[in-house]
Length: 434
Length: 105
Image (cartoon, rainbow over all chains, first blue to last red; front, side, top):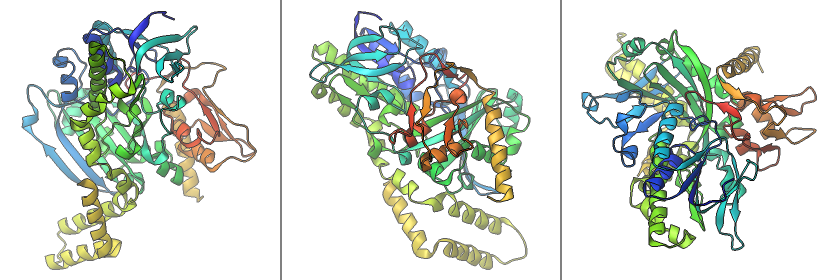
């Protein structure tokens, strides 16, 4: 491969890798980006929601050329039992603004676009190239990467690992421990195609408006997980995900869970008549702060999913990926400009940048949520059933007086979970959320 | 398993295969990127994969051993997380350019 030594090698062409490579190239660094797929995006899977702010910080006028599907004007949170959902919907005309903050995207198309911006900025992209390991000098400092191409070694001052959730290169190079099954969710997704006007009518939309539905409840059969439906221009992204540890323990098939979700009486009419064109699976790092690996060392730095940068509660990941990619690149570019090496001591500035922004603030705020969710199956089974039953009792007009109804509802909660159990759950939730 | 559960399991198994037909793959013929270590009795984790692999790549042979056919693999890494450390399987990404090719992602 090239005998040239690069300022930086970026492993991976997803949101974090593209953000890093773009930022570096724009600052005049000589960047090589390696991607194992046939084209950027061909291996990448996401729901997918794009959070505009993170991309605006990198490409302020992205709306002029990026392939965006719909901007989100309505969020629906559903708690489902077997025959019902209790929903919290928020819809606002205020979201029909000049610069909307959330869009649905199709990652294969979006990543291709982002990658074009990276190349236009001057980075060199090499696809169909799988990085196999990091190269080190005698002192242990990372000096480049080996790939699966013939004579496939290539050298750089720093390697930015934007390799995604599996993080195989970093793991093989002993930069981090193996992912724990409790810390990753397996999500499966189908792309359901429908005419645009059908989607508009079914979801009460016009123009480029979009809806996001996030669901939790008995659809995951007590496992920690959620399901989603996102409206794209002419398709719906429909998926469900659960922690790998829960799936392994129950032996439930993710494809089976997805079928059941699609056939839920509240979901089925939304999908009726659709044509499925793709089925995808992907891991999501959901272990939070406590599952985060080392983020930098001599000659290397980690961004995006490989660094476990996901806020599972708020369904945020790609924005953390882009932000960490940008911050890592700014750290490296700053060192380059000052003429100092990308040593572990110097790369510590990356941590400071992460802590000064929402990335680490949010990771820290929610550090106890993953263990709370994992240790509390009631949230995904018992509570949705109780809430649904209560709502049904309340809304049925059946000749029963209201005081009796109130008593019945309270009794069903206390029978289901005991008063101390209810209070304990509320307390633990409040403490984890704080 | 009850009759109903067996029916549901069979239905799910068929559906996974059907789902994979929607996808595009460039199969690296003769070079599977995942291999199962030869064994007499499969571990609990290997057995779990016969049920939870989203592409249905893992199955049990007549003798009870777990086998893999990785052609339909979506490269999610679930099996790697469950069985990589124990050595039950050896997991690599497909060679550059091979494997699943998402059109929408």
